[in-house]
Amino acid sequence: MHVVCGVKTHIVTGVEITRATKHESPLYPDLLKQTAKAGFTMREVSADKGYISQKNLQATVDMGAAPFIPFCSNVQPDRGTDLWSKMFFYYNFKRDEFYQHYHKRSNVETTFSMIKSKFGERLRSKTATAQVNEALCKVLCHNLCVVIQSMYELNITPEFMSDAA
Image (cartoon, rainbow, N blue to C red; front, top):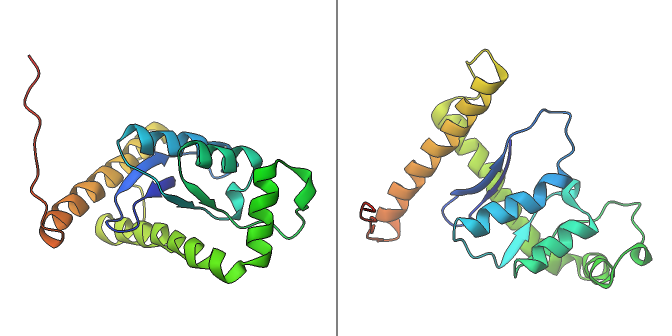
C-alpha cells in the first residue's frame, strides 16, 4: 500500500495498492493527482528515496508544492534537469534544513501504525481482489475516524452536501 497523508490529521488523501514486487516511483504522480483531486492543497511533499526521479520532482512542483525526497548515494548532480540539480545541491549542502522538512515523512509511518492498530495488520480475504477491497476499506474507516477526531480536536463543524436532484 502506497499512500499520501496529511501531516496534521493523518488523513489518507491518495492510495495505491500494488503487488510487493512493483516499483513505487511510477505511482507517485497518481498519488499526487488523487490528493489534488480530493481538494487538498499541498505545500510540501516528503517521500522516501524510492520515489526520487526527475519526473516525480517535477510532478510535485507542478502541483505547487516543494519536493523533499532524499537522493541515493550514487546520484550525480549534472544528470538531470535544473530542478534535479537544485534539489540535489539543497539536499547535499543544506542537509539539516532539508531534513527539517523531510522529517514530516514520518507521519506516513504513524498513519500506517494507526490503521494497523485499529483494524489489524493482516488481511483476511482469500482472493487478490478481495484483499485490495479489504485494505481500501481499512483506509476508508481510518479516514472516517480521523475526520471525527479532527472535528473535536480542531473544533471543525462539518458541512454536509445536500442530495443532488
